[in-house]
Amino acid sequence: MTEESCAYANPEPEIIASYKVNPEDFKVFEEISFAPDGEGEHLLLLIEKTGLTTQEAQKRLSDFFQRPAVDVSFSGMKDKQAVTQQWFSIRLPGNTDKTVADIAALNSDLLSVLEVKRNSRKLKRGSHRQNRFQIRLRELSGNPEYLLDRLETIAVQGVPNYFGAQRFGRDKYNLERARRMLAGELKVKQHYQRGLYYSAARAWLFNRVLSERVQLGNWNQFLAGDVMQLDGTDASFKAQADDPEINQRLESMDIHPTGPLWGSSKSGSQGQTAELELRVAAAEKSLCAGLEAAGLNSQRRALRSPVRDLQHHIVDSETLELEFTLNKGAYATVVLRELVKLRALASEQANEQDSSGQDSVAAEEEGTAGYDQAGHEASNQKDLEKIAF
Image (cartoon, rainbow, N blue to C red; front, side):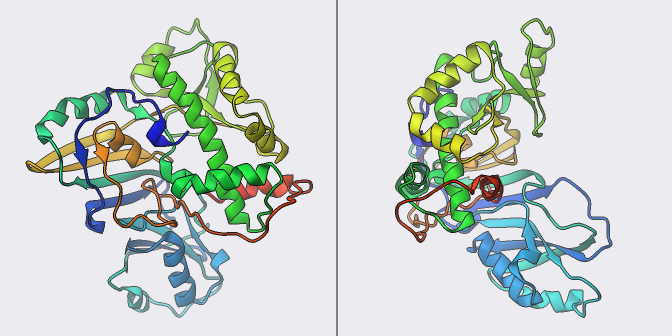
């Protein structure tokens, strides 16, 4: 289920707005979860890029430092049609002749280096803590004053943590490829592409579960058999109905109910939660079977996304500026969809990138039918992990 067809937590918005009219209308600031230690063979660069994919920025750094792409790492992928700041690490064993002054030669209209640090370890995928967004909505079809109550509601209750439509590719390209790949009808040689398709399939199932819980009104409440996740982490635990602190911790957004990222192992949910999830899965038997056969580890994802530090500024009767912070993996467009109806992007392309710091590449891959998954299970989980949220 794509974002457009998912249930709303609030009444469906009536005001229409444009976004990403210019790259400056959508700014993303990545915040890593550690402080560089100041020494070691890895050089950490905070860069600002405009109109570049994360892979294109990686290629520029690889060429400049004359290092293979495997030595140029990043935590999360960021939007192309935006101004984004993110960290890269470059492995430079031994002494290097590159000075800060030399590195300044990287600067251009599309990419600039903001900070340079040393670190003893490479930057791993998903090592950022959160993303801060500055977004300008234009051409509002109604008075922005009408949106203030909704903004207050979003700040208090958060939003359903759907995967954005970009996760599935243009016209659900990634999802349809996933269906064919998991059914054995399509051979996908490239690890990155396989990771995209696994991710699209699991996101589809997760959105279906979450949408049903939104319709039932318990997406942000305790349901018997829930697995809870600590806010901003991957740590989870099975909630007990007789725990007097559960509701209080839910209200304070210290914890969140979770939904399944389908795989071969048990999801961990029980009772009413497991019944609901299995009922949704029954409608997608072939997709679930394919993911199980691929040997992917079952995981859990929070059903709720807190929207922190939410601020707004009414520029004029047709323009609204927003600033907020989301945990890694959460989509800014999912926040916006609870506020306004977004017009389609004029620059929408098949390889358009998403608004959560992730690419949603819908590229062609080699191979057609007869994909034998035997022998691939060990590498499939690694393929999936290449897609950082």
